[in-house]
Image 1: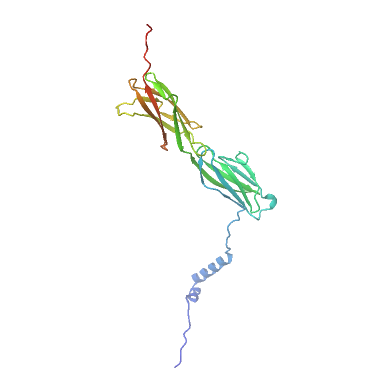
Image 2 (image 1 turned 180 degrees about the horizontal axis):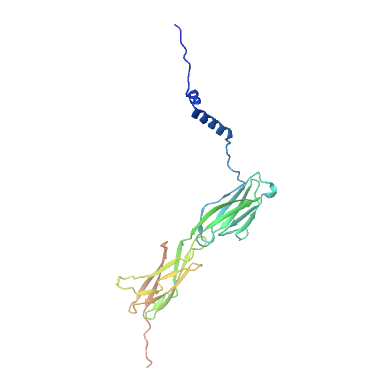
Length: 253
């Protein structure tokens, strides 16, 4: 038995025989001839830092600037700038750093005292790179409440200075913070024993808010619990004052 051989055909000759097919093939070959693979642009430096921080005026953010090994040794000095906060090396918004043997320059950025976005920029040998650090408001972690007097004579004219002070373990709370003052009566009564004027006070840059308490019920004797609450954190503190009777006046015999 003899085996017959059939020619193997493909679509390419048929495509090439058509004028449109010839144009398509030539265009594809021309595109391949002109193609040059692209490579990422060389980055001579980079900044490494966290992208968020707490605006308490004291917290530190570690900054690392990586300088490329191809940068000439006499041009590797790093100029660092920030639009918020200060560098601990000099207490300024600018710093000049020298990278170590591994090409890393390090700095510490002290946080600003209120919420903002810091633009951190590094420049080496004419090349610059930037990154952002978002600083959020520093909420208080604790609160003290101190009346000027803890024993108060009962009188409609009773007026007591009261001071609330906000604290954080690191730094100070951002200002202003709203501090709301109120009276917690130890007995259930339809009306408060006294009022604060004003009842809502904005803290200052030192975390202090001051107001005055006025006794509303001159017939009351006993303890009164004063309360201060920071909004929106909800941190609360109380202090107890004792309302005592005013000394009776006696006429001379």
